Length: 498
Image (cartoon, rainbow, N blue to C red; front, side):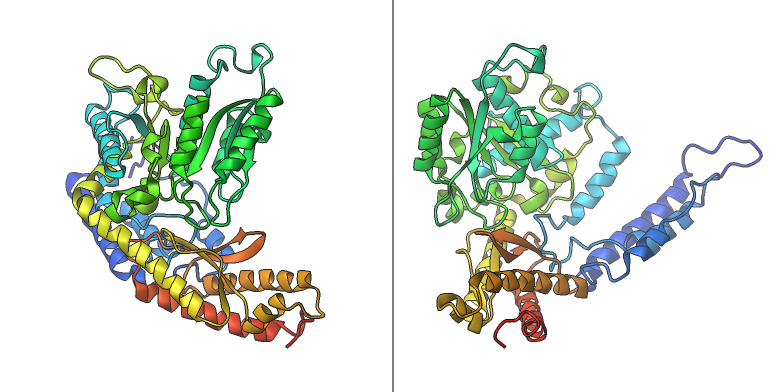
């Protein structure tokens, strides 16, 4: 620490750094050992968190040991513990331990993997990871592609490539200042199409109205006949369709669209076929799941997120584009990734993926993916065997949505009572939200609600390699207990039959 106007020592003494490193590794190892026993969600008031970090900008440097004390005292305890086996919120990977070390090494060598010369090994590790991922899911391995911050930027890269390749929309020089153009339109399913597609249309300045929502079938997958009718109607109206987005594992119910049928339509009409597999595409690694993804290999582009179902820590998304030249023309013997996507400065995010793939191998990952799906199947069994729960989907991959509906209200919905059905549905929406809130606040688990067919449902994303069927059963019991208690307390005030 500097004093009397002296410059601070730029680097820690090697021995001091080793001691801090050993302490940090002990912290990480202890965290992994105890994460199963920690409350998943914050057991403190938000004001406590604010107060913990409410301090002025330091005028003088602090002792590194004291800084680590603060990490242990405030940062870790006030985290939401996504590595927990009972974290079922959003779609977030559980974090592989080896990746923690990978991030430390990546930060140490500190390569900018935007240009080959500052990052020779970083570039080649990323290129190898793209090929390995493509091979693992059955996509052509000579693909172009890169790692991104996540699914939104992966979809941005893919849809920008689609726009440039399938239309006359010149995006580089004149941009929005060019001549009058037709309305360029793209298509995704109405129920399960991901919101990132709408965000990308916004970022590309196409306007959110450019995203056409195609009606879904009863199984939540795209109705391809409806897609054909929409394409014909839009073309007759003077619009210029350029891309169709198929889902390979959707955000609410793990739906996989009929990818082969969509690919046929795109081929017939010379449309770009993009497969949004951010949540579920890696399921194609498992031989017995492979047939569900038939047609994904025909996509002009595919996105998937290793920081989801491959359990790699944030950030790590990926995009494949079949023809690399659509992304950029690489120089002989080198790849400059800044030409492929929106980022010029790019961290070495590939190292944690490379180390995780090498650690688990295909067979190890296949076993972990199977376990996730088996947990979702077990959850479906529990839902269907309980009088006060209602299934809203068939189990598919690892995301499963369902509702708490007391048995007497299930009967009331089938045979409407004097109480208006709208009030029953409103009450059930409130009840399901209340159940989720209570379980989350208890620290037992973290899960979310979502909307399926305009009804509030409970949703569990079983996206942790630590989750077992026992974890699912424990959380289901907690949901059932909370549901019965809240329904008993709320029913009379809701003006519904007690």
